[in-house]
Structures are given as C-alpha cells and as structure tokens.
Image (cartoon, rainbow, N blue to C red; front, side, top):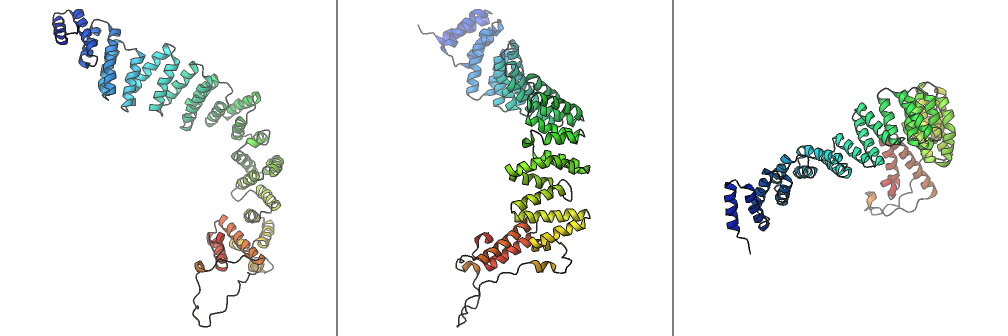
Length: 472
C-alpha cells in the first residue's frame, strides 16, 4: 500500500514533540525513502541521527544534500552541510577532502588549505600514500609558489616507494630556494634529495653551488671530487671546474677543463679559466693545455672552435691576443676573408693598446693590403711610405657606356632604376667588383660601421640596379 505522506509527516511531528525521537526518526526515514530529493527532510533526518549519536548513519543523508547543492552550484551551502559532519567526526579525510575541493572550486585556496592538509595528514597516518599524494598535487596546483606543498608532495612520493621521483621534485624545490637566495633552506633540501638517491648529479651539483655561494668553496670542491671519483659524470665535472676556480685553484680547473670531459664543457667554463690565467699573466700555461684541444676541434668541429676563440678573444678588455692569433690562423686556413679582416682589426687594436707599435703596424699593413676601405674606416694610419690608404684601393670598374641619346631629345631624363629592364648577367670583372663591395659591406656591418656598409651597397645598386641581393 502506498505511503500516506501527509499522515506520516504529521505523525512524525507529533512523536517528535512528545520527545519520542527514535519513533519520529523512523517515520521521517520512511518519508525520505519516498522523497529522496526533499533536501530539508534529508537534513532533518541527518540532524536527528546526529542528535542520538548515530553520526555514521547521518552521513549518507548529509552527503546526498551536499551532492545536490554542489551539482546546482550552491557550493557554500554544500560546505555548510559537510561541516556538520566534521563537527561530529573532525578527522574524516574523505569529508575534509570534499570541503577543500569545494573551496578550490570557488577559487579560495586559502580556505581550502587547512582542510586539504588535514585530509593529507589523515591519509598518511593510515598509510594511504597514494591518496595523500593526490591531495598534495591539488595543493601544489592551487598554490604553486608555496614550497612546503611541493616538499610534502615529494615526501609522499618517497613514502610510496618512488625515491627517484621524490628526489627530482626535491631538487626542483631546492633550485627555486637557491635562486631566491634562501641558501640554508636549499642546502637542507638538496641533502634530503641525496639521502633518497645518493649520487644524483643534479642534487650534487646544486648542493655544491649552494655551498660555494655560502663561501664554502673548499667543502663544495671536496664533495664533487669524491662524487666524480666514485662515478664519472660530465655535469658534475662542469660544476667542479667553476668551483675550483672559485676556490683559487686555477691549475686544477684547467686540468679538469681539458680532460676527459672537455667536449661537454660549456664555453663559459673555458672563458672563466682562461680569464683567470690571463689576470695572473700566465696565459701561456693555459694555452699550452688548450692547444691540443683546439687542434682536435679544428679537425672535428671547426664551427665550435671558431665560436670558442671568438669568445676567448674577449676575456681581456682590449682583446686576448693568444685567442686572436689562433683565430686568425684558423680563418686564414679556411680562406675566410671577412673573418680574417675582422680579426686583423681586433688584433691591431689589441697590439696598439699594449704599446706594441711594431706589431700593430705589421697587422695594419696586412689589413691595408687585404681590405683598404676597412682599414681607412677603422682609422688606421697610412703607410709610412706615403702611399696612403686610397692608393691601395683597386680602381673601380667602369659602368657600361649608356646608349646613344635619342636625337629628338625626348629621353633626356634618367630612367629610375625600378623601371629598368632586368640586368644582363654580370661578367667576370663585374662579379669581382660586386663581391668585393658586398664583402666590405659585411665587414663594416659587423663592426657597427653602418653608414659605410650602406654606402658600399648603394654603390653596387647604382651600377647594377637589377642585383637583387644588394637591393635587399
């Protein structure tokens, strides 16, 4: 027989007024089964169950209410219902997690934090590391700038058996702390990562850099030297080179730099070591160790050695002559005319800044013969013989004679280049002239002499308007 809802409700209310809570509750539960979406009724049943201490029995009723409110977007009402559960059972991780999630849906991470942390603690206490891991992931996503969330996440990974993942996460947190200048904090985190995964290169290198930044370079060097002896690792050697220099041991830095890990060393490492020797006036020692490496790279990786020599040429304010000399030799062997000219300009300045005038003049004479216009633009003095810079410049190639003028004089005005017919193919002499001008323009541009570069290009376009690369 169908339940008479109105009669049952009145009976339940009468029983409740009489203080017969258990009997009234049974009537209300019968009503709730017939009206599962009557939220006030469900709330009343939950409250009555809580009143008589049946908190676990109340949860399904509160849960259905919270679910309905959440589905309808009434998050605060859902939270209020779930907090009723927490008043009676404050350590229920599933309910704590739901409250935290509802706050996150409202973009209120500060409100969510306490509930989520409490939930994670309860999961960890019950050895539910996977569940705790998911909670901390939510916190990291909600508050990415809080390093404690990431530390807790890493620890749950470690507790769950993922030592490698935990160590990697810890290194990331430590790197952030070191970058922010929190060196003591970073040191502890690096050491914890090494506890989880001894010998991890990123943790070793980070810890060593951290120690070096705290003025403990000798301790950092000893740490990496032991690690490198136990397990050869290029990334560790790179950091050790820098720390050896920081500890005032350039000879050790040079030995490491040019040793078995030389190919993995960044250009900055070479620059730092060569600079330290140059400052001591001991460049010859550094280059004696570097030359075999330069020779091998010249054969196997010429682009790298050119880039390295160009960088090392700048370790002294007025130019590092050993690097410039080797760069000039290399470019000469590869017939790199533009590169040779650029290197000669730098060498002439380097010699002259050191009052080595005879050497500077020898370079200037070579430069005048190779690229007189560049020598003139660079302000090099003319040859002592009085020949002058202009005398060394090749005579310009004469442009082809224009066609005879129209007898009627109708075409007296010059035709703008953009309306001329496409240029005919250049002959050998014209090719040589154009190539020379373009090379000089390239050199001028490299040294910031933009007006001179533009003038060279304009000269080409005046003579050969159809030459596309000059126009561009």
